[in-house]
Length: 267
Image (cartoon, rainbow, N blue to C red):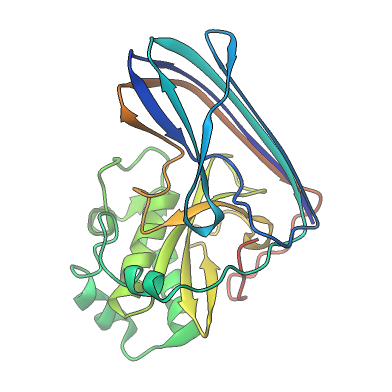
């Protein structure tokens, strides 16, 4: 399967701004082919961001702009095939079972045990996915950037990251390592960056998408982390930015049938 993905950003910066972008496809070995291009201009002049490696093959592209500027970013990638599974790090399995900023598994422990009883393994993962899908309504713009899993459950609505945070928190409450993955998702409507959850069961990471808005088998990883605090597509390390425009594209030469009960690994 071939996926063609991309992102175009337009934003202004204040003086002395340092920013990090997580928009590039994660680099893992195993793809049949992998081509990409990143073009960045500041006030019309080409600039070269620094690339920093993150976990799970993710990459941050960092810009430091001493003067206020209008920045245009264009990223495209063409990926064919699937990547090889990354080595499993025991430290990460410990990290991903702990509560985090947006996935408050300690606060949702009673809920998780009340709803999922003695379920274990993939049966538990599937039950959590289905429960979150039933409990929440997908409503664009309905959540705040500060809302975590508890707020999402109370409001019973959210966007993809909110669905993922709630699933992650419920799984961690049952001692299942779980993390958030930012992805390009062919077939997603409306098109945007997408967030899904991954759970470590039976020696492998399995992706679940409680929103059910796109086929998982065509998704391409950008990065992954404890929650969306680790995976934001654009963040400032200093200074200030004002986002003017964001366009995301993701298409596949064929869209696979999505069976929500199937076990799927992210490419």
